[in-house]
Image (cartoon, rainbow, N blue to C red; front, top):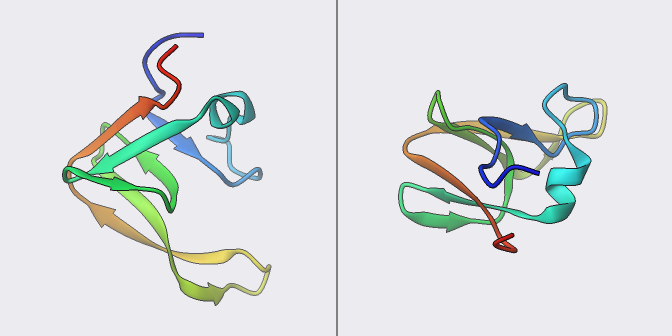
Length: 80
């Protein structure tokens, strides 16, 4: 595997940006310099993350998300 995280990644298995192997390896996200642990999806090139909006669910049972724009940094938690 490469040592740089992908430009875009999602935790939703139905998304085309979902990659179970990378998620299993562990990816950390810093948003505007603050560590975030509740990120559902991110995009480095566009500078946004999606986080759950409380406990609200849509009609398919998936959490509602909010898109936040800012400086996004992704890294592998295990280091190698």
